[in-house]
Image (cartoon, rainbow, N blue to C red; front, top):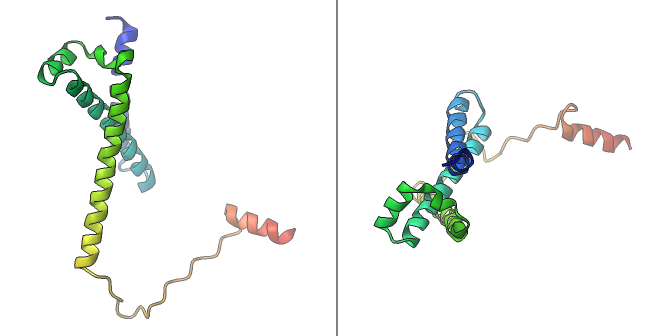
Length: 148
């Protein structure tokens, strides 16, 4: 097998492993938004790879197809498998949609079980949002608008 064929074969796996490494390195060093983005990319690539492989195996005969795919993984990257990649993408979307719906149902269940209540001493007021500083981009725009 040529180097180009191996590169095409393992590129999604290398991207997935690289995202996993970046996630592990940035865990203690980055803010929550960076970790969230890396985690979403990592899980998205994993879901695409897993559901595409599953769709290919199901479309090509189940158990014997697993052996064929293990012997010749390039079968997954042939042009004839383009529809399988579409099915894999739709499968990954369905997995994430199911997880989102489940999390919303659990959240609503927790709200029903543990209703929110007023904390003592809060008097129902929320703290006011701080005004934009003159150094922030919003403050610069406000200052520019006031000057013109």
